[in-house]
Image (cartoon, rainbow, N blue to C red; front, side):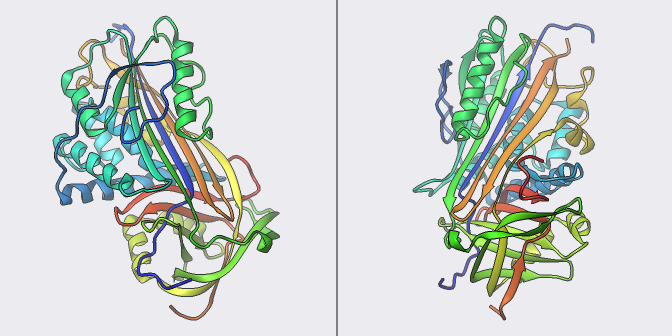
Length: 432
């Protein structure tokens, strides 16, 4: 393998999918997008509003930094539950960004803090649009695709300012749905869209069916497909011991290669970067020293990851890593609440008055489900999130042997955004 100047490359098929389900009812007690998956059984009401001018470079950098900070915050909450972890916080951030466009007051402030939205709304959303367009730019074959869409209850009034942001800055086309008389059919149509956008990896995301109180659904899908620049030879894969997070030793299919890779190490960890065929993408594997997993996870920050990358050198790496495939569902309500997003889930305090003046909305459900496959040819990953809202009414040769729990990150190197993050606690387990 010839020497490279960049550490690049993402996983072969990384699919991330995110849904924001905004639900409304009268309780008075208190595709579209950059890439458009097939939209079954829904009527398109309007195409995406043409995009405006690009944001400033400084604003785009602030959004990227915020996404990466949110990535690590969310990862720590999910990792605390134990077992395997896979999620796409970047997709969560994009979908929640559409809901955030309608948040006001303390709800807006709490969402901004929890999600690391560090710009005022009039600058944040254009910067998100510019960043997303750069993420999907130049993908001649496969690569990354991003889509946003909106399903609206027929006749439901949304404020023009909200629909303009969602259409212009998130590229979301509006589709008609009949939640009030056929919630099962609307749910089925959205789930079909999710399946299409995630290459059939995420099925039946919304369970049980949406209620008749549903008024609006906002959806984001991120899809990535690539292969390793230096594939692992299948004949080199053989079973080996892997020490799991709970102390067991299991026999896992261990892939092996000896190649030149970017490599860095500290007293607490080893890190290696694997390139994909597309020059902007890479996968980073972080292997804590024995007994140092918790310390490494606690110390992860965007700056520590950047420092590791800056210290990386090209090495002849004797690399052993397990082949793995698993799915991990997560309920995001508690993690996001713990991160400070409290009022959005409170029936009496949520303020989404920038979305509609017809009813008071609050977030009742926030679900995430993700999938990853890491094998000799490359990587496939998929994720889906549903947020339901209801109304209130070069050096020496080194060895990198991942035979114990390790972390992985998938990123776009030029844009500087981590698209997926996870932990392999047991490569033989099919779930968390």
